[in-house]
Length: 199
Image 1 (cartoon, rainbow, N blue to C red):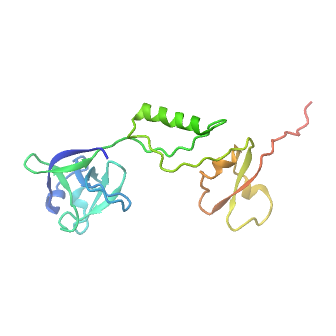
Image 2 (image 1 turned 180 degrees about the horizontal axis):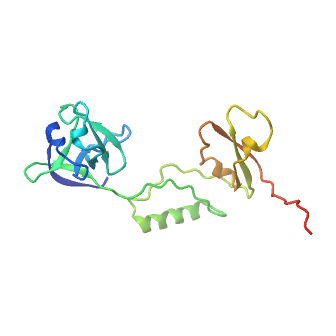
């Protein structure tokens, strides 16, 4: 984690109500239930005077929107930079998280290790990590990927299946998600042949 120490002071609900949308604050960096023992840069999502019952809508620099009760002793509250305050750890933006599936032609263990080593050399050994690794032989075939409603086809007409992604390799299908209420149908790829007579 990339953090820095910032001198800040915890604000009361009355002080937060005086803040505007441009005023920088710090709130708990916990995201999606992941407990992080530090704070994140943030801004009010709505002017402080619009708070309801002392609950303030806050948006962190990482896109999380949370509601905070500054005066609640059980919460970590809202902080603002203040030289007379205390030191807190503030999470800094460390970059972008990429989930990558790589296709290595004629791949073997040595070529995968070389690829991993070069990525670590380029971005740093502490940055590039293999969270899960799976070696899958990729057949040199293509499939057609259709979406159709999960309740099944009422008729076999193309209306329910008019959205298709062509030239998809079978292993890539596992990394795609269907639209809500739709499911994927995978069929062997068929080249589109135009039978229109020409003059």
